Amino acid sequence: MTPDYERAAIKATETLINHYIGTAPIDPLPILKKTPGVLVLSFEEMSKKANIDRKEIISMVGCENQDAVTTVYLDGEKVRYVVAYNRLLSSRIIDRALARELGHILLGHDGTRPESVRQEEAKCFAHHLLCPRPLIHSIQASGLRLTMEVFGNITGFGEHCLSCIRKQPPVHVSAELNRAVRDKFRDYIFNFFDFQRHAMHTDGSALADLGNYMEGYEE
Image (cartoon, rainbow, N blue to C red; front, side, top):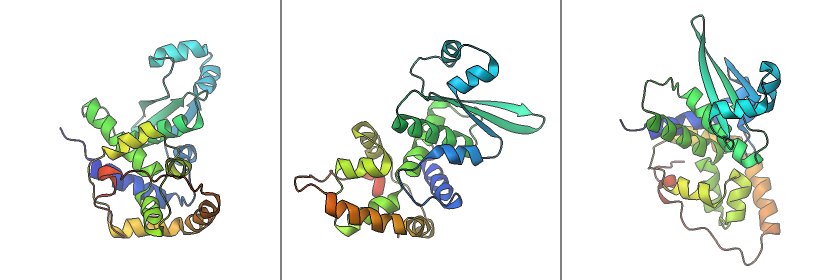
């Protein structure tokens, strides 16, 4: 079974629009908290509510460095989700982890499809949520160098995440959705570019291209 990368990218783009996101880096935690049927807790908060030692919680999810995990259960006929995350990790890791879990939820992953497929779709969703192509396109069109520093400031991503993004297959998101995202970020883009032009170091080298990530982009 092949992951539906395009559906994941479209869902991420629609999420930015529906939640009126217009600044970066993007924090998925408020989006998760506003999603119906979702309870979000840190492992520490879960430990207090369940009266279970935090180390036992960590053991239950399988790894001391586990960043986040989602549990699905039925409340009558309604599907409910509990998202638990490791608050002790860096904010960038938490953002990526919560964006991935949000992807699982909004894409309706219920365990009926192979885990590898679900994981690929959720990662694709997270990349398009935290690294919107309209923002990247605006940088490229402006002539501002897309340095690793600029890329990190916008997306919260580092070198490892950038390499993952480059491997994303081409997807098509409608020009209408792309324009809607760009319009919501219009003020942020203007202010960010103005700041970067003054703060940019003269020795900043531009990143190589983003591989397939920008293919299929339409204004």
